Structures are given as C-alpha cells and as structure tokens.
Image 1: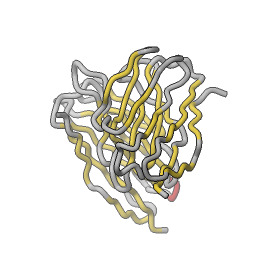
Image 2: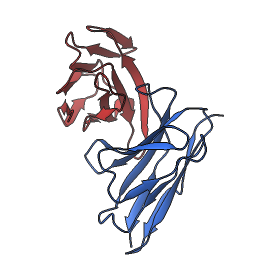
Image 3: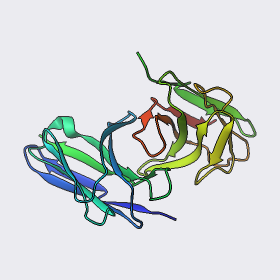
Length: 111
Length: 112
C-alpha cells in the first residue's frame, strides 16, 4: 500500500531560525496537502498543491510539490513560538481519493 | 457558524463494552471520515463515507463499525472486539473526495 514518510520526526528550532521538513510518498500523488496540529488540538488544513513543481507561500511558510509528484517540502523562515505544533503532509494516490497521512514533524521552539 | 461537532470530548470504556462516538457536521459535505491517532503517530483511516447509506473500510477497520443514515451524521462505534481502543479519535469531512478535510475537535477514549 501507499506509504507517506516525513522527516525529521522532531525539529527543535531556535526562535528566528529557518527549517525545512520533508515529505516522501512511495507512490505518485494527485495532490499534496499540509495540516498543522497544535498541542492538544486537531489538524487544521494549511494548503493544497496540485501541479508538478508547484510552489506556494503563506507569509513565512513556503510549500513545494516535487516534479514527480512524490515528494513535498515545507520551509519556515524566522521561526516564531506560534509555529509550535505538528505538521502533517497527506495525499491521495492517483486513481484514489483516500488521504494517507505522514507521521508528522513535531516542532518545538526555543525562545 | 459551520463546522464539525464531536462528542463526547472524553470517553471511558469498560472491558467488554461497546461505545459510540458522535460526529455531526453542518458544512453540507458529502464525504466524511474517521481517523485514529496514537501518540507520536500520524492519522490512520478507520472508515470513510462518500454518500448517505454507503461507507467503506479504511486501513484499520477491525473492531469498529459505522453508519451513515444522514448526510450530517457519521457515528463511530468502538466494539469490544477492539482490544486496544485507547487513542484520540478524529472525525473529518470534505466537499469532494481527495479535497481538503475539515476536522472536529476529537474524542479521547480510554479504558477503565
């Protein structure tokens, strides 16, 4: 079956620094979605990328979908304490619609 | 204000007992989903439904059952056959399949 892997599992960041988290699928995806889950909360949809090589920005967050539509990345610049949480990528394989979620990258920030 | 309501927020199950988790949405979404989340892990799909009176098993359906008698409602029953039910259960919905999903606040289930 399809597998979605995320690295790293944990990211400890100094406030103000940049970091990137990566998402890799064993199969080609029709789209890639990113969600953020704050501690004790539920996942909240951030963004969806559909096109090969697509890049989208949301303020300090930059999302990229790979050319082969099997990988994605999330880059956060100038990390703030509000960025704390777990970031999940998820995607449906082609010819399917169920989302497969990665295990997430849990981000902590040192002030 | 539209959204998904899950209840209860916390639930305790005794050995051999079936419990039902409620999920109601007023977003007029056709597709609904149930996920299980264990500490340090991602979301695993239990059941999903694209339309009323139809639902499909996800990756970990054993020990669970669902119904979809109304578009707005998708309750999940955790049966006594589920030997390790302690987890955080999340209900979600989407306009279309493979579209972005909107999640409820979740139900934390524990064994007494």
